[in-house]
Image (tube, rainbow, N blue to C red; front, side):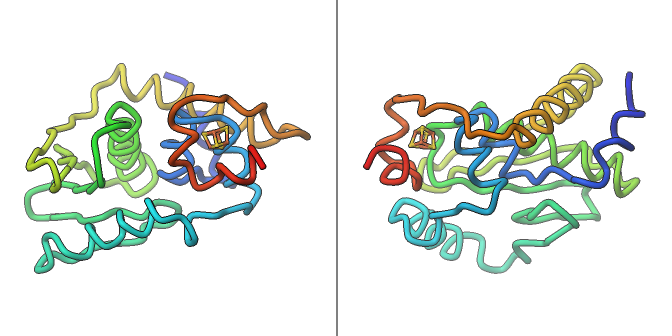
Length: 174
Ligand code: SF4
């Protein structure tokens, strides 16, 4: 596995949000990576924050570990938590959590045996593990992200259903 690539990427550590956006929309990834953000003003994002604040209040939350902002870590049980408002982007949520586990392993020398993806509004948890195949895939994804964010121009608008609830909607369409 080409872990030497991690050295090349180490100066520009990719955040979990960037990895998530890679799956959702390359344009969103690009704009966010250039510091163009609208998340604070967006109603969906505000609702997501309120949900996060109202569940699991006794757990420590939002641990910033370098470039990643983890919703919760239990070091005794080697478990990492991530909470989401809805499962509409479940696949990218799973990859984000796998990336957190990858990050802890390769940048922080800490093995996390399991990730728990929480959808409290749906009363549902998804257990996530990191396999060797996932690690190889994450390396490819990091390389692809690195290429996208170095482009001179933003990728085109994708015109999909997700655009309606996207924080960048007005920026892309108006
Ligand atoms: S509005 Fe659509 S095209 Fe624009 S960033 Fe969001 S998802 Fe991408």
